[in-house]
Image (cartoon, rainbow, N blue to C red):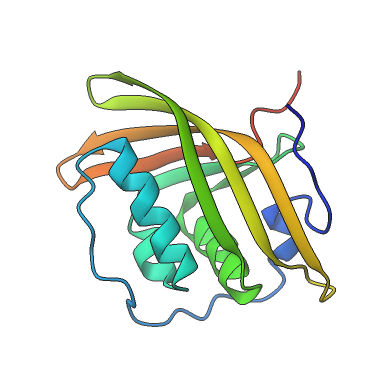
Length: 153
């Protein structure tokens, strides 16, 4: 299913300003399952807590953009998350399928973004997402996020 885009084609388009992190707003949430991780991530972004959202990623995580370019590492992810918060984006994550294999899971779902683009216009975007989660000593974390699905080859 093709993502509906009206205002934002990628997180890169929103990332014009350096991050300005605020202290944690959302208390740490248990991330004992991929479902709990999705809920914690959406809650952190919706509360404007970039640090809490960033804490849910592995150190060398990646975001796959619709054009296939990849944002790599915590600094790039932090900038993307800050752009969401700066543009008052709210997230709704609906998980469709979770495919776990030990300490790794592929999660398919629907991501709905609502917010304001860099030009000040409101947008709504719905896409089919693919996310890879990994479990470590601190529980489940996001490793790779393709919020607009995987790009076509």
